[in-house]
Amino acid sequence: MFSPPNDALSRRVPFPTPLALSLPQMPQHWKCEFSMKPPFSSVMELIFKILCLLSFGSESLDELWSIMRVATTEPEKFIGYKDRVVSRVGVLTVTAGLLLATTAAFATTNPPSPEILDYSKTGPYSCILTSFGFTLGALVVGSSQLFVMTQCTPNWCLTTIFSSRSRLVCTMFVMAYPVFALIVAAGTNAIGIILATSQSSSRLVRSGSVILTVVPGTMLLAFAWTQFVIVVRGTKDWLRSQLSRRRTRRSGSGDLVSDVVGDTGDIAIPEMSRMQRDPELNLITGK
Image (cartoon, rainbow, N blue to C red; front, top):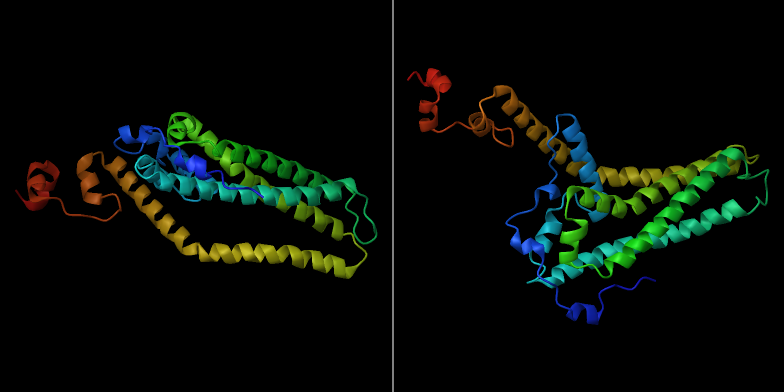
């Protein structure tokens, strides 16, 4: 339904020299670092990682930056990455269109058997209308993303939508909205169906609606279990980094304690020359 945006003609068009080649390293506003007091900094880092995951499929922008750096010398990497993002957005847009058609059918027709399934009451119908609104938003935003991404270049991305922290966050919000909207739409639609079947005169319909809703939920739990190791590893790394920062702030010794504790939270013995120059550690060495 959605053809790849990079046809043979667009692949022959050379990219202009991207701004990334003139930058020695990743810009600061691309990094998941916020100069706020805890716990606000931790909350902002979590939100930033969620946005990266929903918009680009990774918890950071390191992969995107590595592709931007070589966009001129290796343009096929940027084209492949853009095709992958466009394909994901296309799948979400198709899913939103199918869900929109299904929700519109419920919202515009009368129930054929109200004694079995009456979704025209206030509770179920409100959920169906909410699902319709979120699905329509996902379809519109996803279609807009496909339109824009067909012509985007590395230089345009770096100088426009990724040029500052606010523009970067807004871009990730726009790219993550179809995923968020589809999750909310599917959830509210399922709640509306359950509310409608809870008042059904058929026991089979009441039991079947619960089973059909629980099964997808168990699939989500199964997928979450497969990613549990990554979550635990990320939690451990985050706790170590937070412990290292807290020790550094409480000590007030600056870079010395930073060297002793380290970024990973492991204790390392300082060099002997450093110990001899430090008055506090001199007490330990007896010099």
